[in-house]
Length: 412
Ligand code: SF4
Image 1 (cartoon, protein in one colour):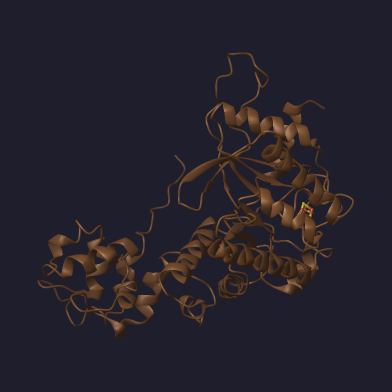
Image 2 (cartoon, helix red, strand yellow):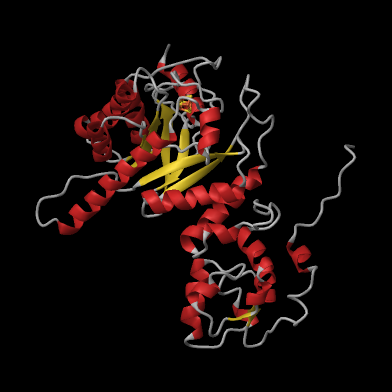
């Protein structure tokens, strides 16, 4: 099988991993006739974020889509009837370097189905990164999937070459994992996350105490994971509780949420259709509230529903459930309280705090502060604005924020 065909299969097989978002980039011209003349090099290119917040393009592929495991939600499971392929180490190295030289990518995201054993698979994944870094002095970004239960020495080596390591937790509840991915062991996954955390902590401590000699490097962009949403019955509260636990226990940089997508010949244990994509979006917004806005997982989801609202963002939904805390006088409110106002982003809050030292803030200042007035005004007091006292008690307040109902067409 030629490399082009392998790339088609193994880039497609990797697209279900949400740890960086796949996107079909433009078809590039390769009229210089070198190597990948007839490929569409946009294939397998995804975007991710570097630790400094830069958006970077990565070649996102599997080393192989053959797998010993039979995770029901996965298109690469052993019982799946899909074409299989396997790259050699040299093929991935060459593809990465070729794409990098042509400016298609700034790095590599490499994962793999599990073949032979955890150690064998991890060694194969590490060998690509080792060759790129040691033989080719590749300076681009590398994200490697870590295979749970792989040998400690292999994980240390992976961290030496990779910027980021990740292990997928897959689903939020242990019982679901046992049903959907019987060969996977949530304790092994968590144990490996714990080992990564220890190594990350050690590397950080070494950095702080280092004098002259450079301390050994270990995944400076930290570790992340992915959770599939909608493959089991877990509600949003359970998902966010699991994320909060993962952030707290393993200091993850990110939890990625991936809406389950139905796969061919799927097991009856799986739902027939995908969850609405907006659910994934709301989970990302809720995750953001936990990481940057001081919200606890417990308070984001309406406890009577267990699910995030699909038609409004979680901060607005929270504010509508806690109207007694508003309106908030932004001339004197604490940063923590300001962060809870619908429409106030972290930067807007910083701008408010800087501005209010110098002047009183008026309605006409909101646009300059990048604050959507319609969303924020019912919840705040400004020098020239106080919401009508009945407004926050109005049962119809929530309706003002819901998207307008769409007229159904008749199809002609
Ligand atoms: S281990 Fe499970 S999720 Fe990973 S590639 Fe194999 S079947 Fe898919």
